[in-house]
Image (cartoon, rainbow, N blue to C red; front, side):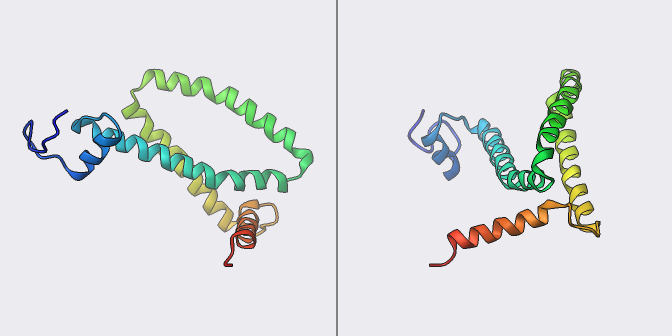
Length: 144
């Protein structure tokens, strides 16, 4: 790896120099590396935000219904996974993944609209879960 910025032809950007100090990466690989990192980061960030809401919805529906929710999720995954596997074997990632992302984004937006249009919010836990989470955060991490 050349140490002189001008060695080997083109000048390296500050981001390229920084990334090459952290990992072995060629300039043409940098965009793919950063895209993969951003995708994984935002996926885990969304999961971290959605998990408490999902769990609150399950608990608010009643502890006696939790086994049915777990079994329903398990059976749904058993049914959906072979279809997903078949689709991924037939299409390339560049064709298939945008539709997967679009599907899940559309689901989240549809639920958001549904929760905001629904007049009776007693069974819809996200509002309640978010309020509880904010209250819990303020109570434990408020200004001191």
